[in-house]
Image 1 (cartoon, rainbow, N blue to C red):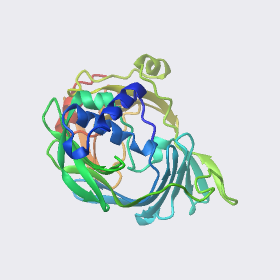
Image 2: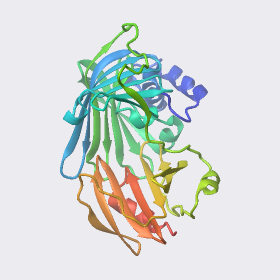
Image 3: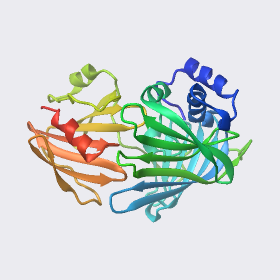
Length: 345
């Protein structure tokens, strides 16, 4: 999958170093190189696999099972087998266009790839990850019947484990990924249950077509992203506020403006390479709906907020200065409250 902000020269240099070492012998800078190689492995490895993703909420877990066909570097076919309400959904993409087939609706929905893909991989800025995280080599193991080693990514700022990946010794594909919160609990887990490396696929398997009887519709428009908040300010119809405090290593990744049902919403995305959170602001001063979650009270500065854990993400929402502000992301409640208290509309 294409990853934003990845320096090609940087990536090639790291991969060249990684190729000199077996995984079990890699140390120091070689582990950085191995991580870079794992991030980019699906750009040149084709496979057919079954993938299970689990997001852990505070009191339950949500599991997704999909059949994944990938023809390197850019072609994807993802067919959902679970949960029941997603059974039969099909996603086809060339990482430029993405079609989501909904047979029960007789629709094909055109989406942005990164908004529609399951946890096959995530966009990674390698340089940012290595600046904020050190990599530790784990023992040999077997994932989906393939020999692998684990790599643990530990924050250079807090010493806390944020993510662990299991890398295929032969192909360097990431076979399993676990994300952790600041308490050490797993928040999200993605793993191949089975995987087969393939050289070719049947003709037309990845063709982006609209079947007879189905209608092509445009999916949700998330707004054009920018890394310059001045661009967001020019588009905004209200004055928004940015956090004065960010956790160590976090910087602004992007901002966007979108209008739906007459409500303009600002989204600012912050990240440290692995963890991300979004700040949403609108001028309605209306609290959002907590789907399938029961919110609990949380104090954010002088404001009374509501918080819930939704699909492994902490969601905190409150009203201030005539705005509704909502934080969603890989944060603890304490981190969310500290960031929120630094925002002054």
